[in-house]
Length: 78
Image (cartoon, rainbow, N blue to C red):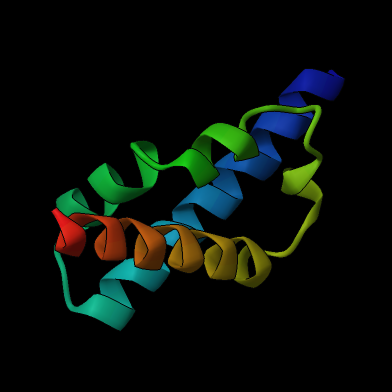
């Protein structure tokens, strides 16, 4: 029962992250899903020891944006 509730929280936040990415970057749902599901943020969101699922969707989105910003700067250096 507890695991179901935790998975539900993760699913809700994930849906919000996808929506935020689509709106902020004018990208398709498929692209937004690809970004979210392949991110370190999503990995940490699913690691129940981090308790990231207790945070608001907007908080987690800021975390994701920071991750993506750092990835871009790494890619630019190559």
